[in-house]
Length: 318
Image (cartoon, rainbow, N blue to C red):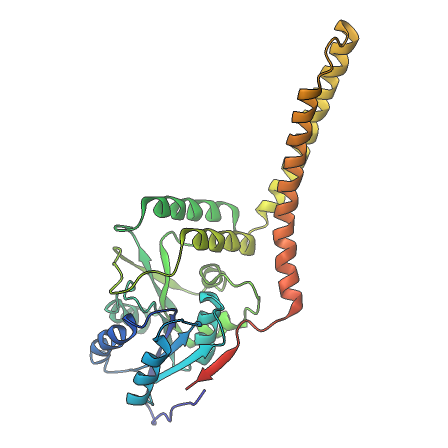
């Protein structure tokens, strides 16, 4: 990526902005952030837009901004859609400011919070200041229910704390960013990585904000899959579930076998009993497949790690 020429004593606050089909929101986001920029006398904001294989004119919007502000607006585009986690990683690797922020381009991450975050780092001495959403107004009830369920579950079964409602939106010192980049795993779950690296983190609470334009690219099933990836990445508890399910099913099957033998010895066996046997076989077979599925998920992650494929491929960058 073409680096800007920084003036002596000039300090930059880099903003990483993952984008997927966000042609409507990119110019609005930039205009809004520029209003924030004038309120930060100590830092100049530079932007690192990451086009995650968009199908619309998102890339052209980035090119326009880069042409107008070549020293402060940079972008890179993937050869295809690699997912938000890859976009976040690419943006963090490209950003070179003393402070680095991660934001969504749809303005659901209120830009004015950057001022409070900056104060938390400069005056209060925190290493990271993150945003935490305390309401889900406007979100589908089913999505809100499963989101709360996920946070309750992951915090019970994982040793890595993941704050309920925490967003990717945060401002970090260079030391925190470098620590995050040192985590080289292929299957990335940023919310867990943010918690795993530690450091002194302050959370700012805010109420849910609707998108400024366009529609979300996240479906319910994509979010569910993302949640399952997070659980597998930061907890071994599902493997314990598989073991306990196997043990319990064996105990019940053994007890049931003893009951059948005793009943046959005392009362005989006037009926063949094939329906009950079929039910037992189906139950045990289902439990075995369930356990194999859990183990298979972990084995699949190991498989992806060992292949050592790049997490993304850059097609164009400025």
